[in-house]
Amino acid sequence: MSVQGRLGRDLLAAVELGAAADELGAEVSRVVASVVPHDAATLIATSPTAGLGIASFTFWHAVEPDIGRALVRRFYAGNDPYPPQTLARRAVPVGIQHAARGGAGTAHAVNPRSPIAALAALGIGSELQLLIRDARGVWGMLGLLRSQGAGPFSEADARRTAELAPLLVAFLRGYVTRAPLVPTAPMPAPGVTIVGPDGSVRAATPQGRAWSEQLSGSVRDPAWVAEAFLTGLATYARRQAHDPRTNPPTLIGPAAAYGRWILCQAQPLDGEARGDLAVVVHAATGEHMLPSFCDWYGITAREREVVRHLSGGTAPQRIARYLEVSRNTVNDHIRAVFRKTGAGGRAELLAAIT
Image (cartoon, rainbow, N blue to C red; front, top):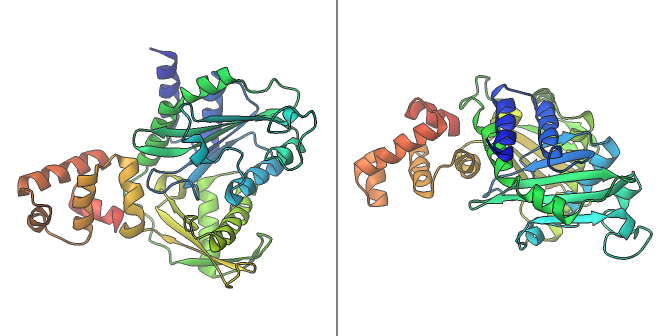
């Protein structure tokens, strides 16, 4: 077995054992470190149709709270040194920056305006970012950090890290699809949390507090992550209010990370987006979750059309007429979806997405 095959097997084995998010973050870091040594790692996950505006879920390992907050704030403010659209244009979608070079070239001191300046002040000397993609699209970002005093990341490190992209895609998809298709817990009512300009929680409905407790218990991220996410979401929502080209501040999270598919949306309470924001969390249903659901389970565009019609209550015979195919072809698509999702039948599939 090749080295990459062995590493991929190790990651998927951790998923199959049902390891928690913090344990999986440590395993991702261990596997990557066997190829590219580093001191801390982050893995931001999304799906091709969701895009990388708001991460669907994240893994962290050995990231100090202040460093993590700086990374989250920078990401949601759109100040990453190598945004996804920049890395996507590269043959090897990796970006490296060094604190000792001012983030951009030959200076000896860190340029205080460079994207790595805040990290350098916290002891980070070098950063590597990999856009995780395949033929279907972008699945996330891997971030590696080295402390000051450690050797900086090199172009050889960039190439070795990029070679890990296929096994990271397989790991992320395996993590999402190993969750039960239909949650056993009753669907909670929507919850609302009011977030102030500084990212602090100013108020919450009882359902909002219940969602917060449920998500904290299921995600098992470091304690600072929830606070940093709210601050980042608020930053992103204010950014989007002034730049309509930015994707809406919406998180669509899979059941593997949150116990059930969730939808988290942020909206400013004033027109200028300078004051409080309302963050609404509720169980996601077909309209919002179906595109990402189909990405994660490898459901094709035509199969997705069939599932969309099924979720709307359309009978297979009528779906065949809409799509101008035979009833047998529709049934073949339905069976393919059952196989990919593990659904025991139409009722279980519809329960999962509606």
